[in-house]
Structures are given as structure tokens and as C-alpha cells.
Image (cartoon, rainbow, N blue to C red; front, side, top):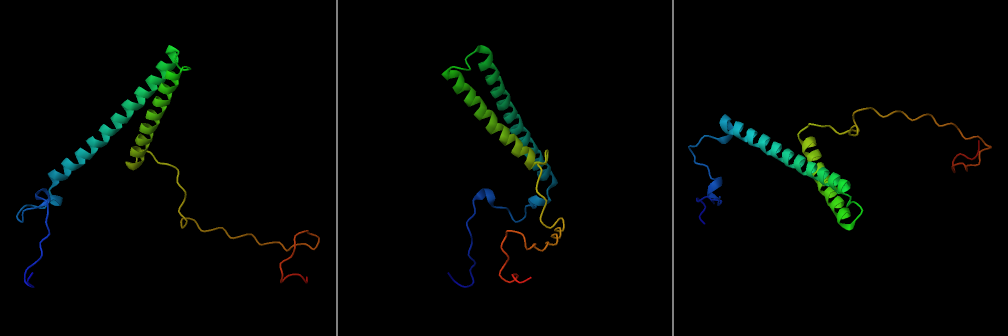
Length: 139
């Protein structure tokens, strides 16, 4: 390569942008469309999770009402329903936490409150059974 030539990196045609095309970040219509698709995607995930959780509950109730809960088939059905319902319930919780619909109790940050001063230590009485540290034996 010569010194005057610039090295061009290869980009997939889908990621190339024409030099005269308006920047996508300034296009409000594209931004509105993106926000709408994120909302639709989130709502579709919530709906999918809710449907699977409801079907799991229906399967549990059906296994108990029909009376197969104590057979091997019933136990496997109950275990499958609990597993599927639990996994999708956790997914629903993570979605809700990610979007701020629910808040979990969190620990306070270390710098939010000043540490409490330690109480003054009382001197050990001579009658205590605990041994004294090496520098304090002669009181």
C-alpha cells in the first residue's frame, strides 16, 4: 500500500450509509417507529409469558381434578407445569424489573448514610476470664 492511500474497512451493504442520506438519529419518524416496535415486542413477550403461565396453572388444576396427580403420568405433568410456569414467571419478573414496572428491595449504597460511630469499649475488669492483650497486662 502506498502512503497516500487510505485503508478502507469492509462493511456489509446493509450497514453502509450513503453520504447524502440524512442521519438516522435525527429522523424522528424512525425513532417513533423504533420505540413502537420495542413496546410491541415487550407486550408480545408479556402476553406469551402470561399465556404459558395460565396454561401451566390449567394443567395443574386439571391433573388434580381428574385424579391423576398421584400416578407417574400425573407427577410428570405436574413437574412439567411447575417448571414451565416457573421459568416463564421468572422471565415476566425480569421484564417487569427491566422496564421499571416493579421495584425490588435493594440494599442501600455504601455512601448513602454515614457509618455509625463505634461505641466506646469498656475496660475489662480484672475478674473477667478473658486474657488481656500483650501490652495491657499491668493495670
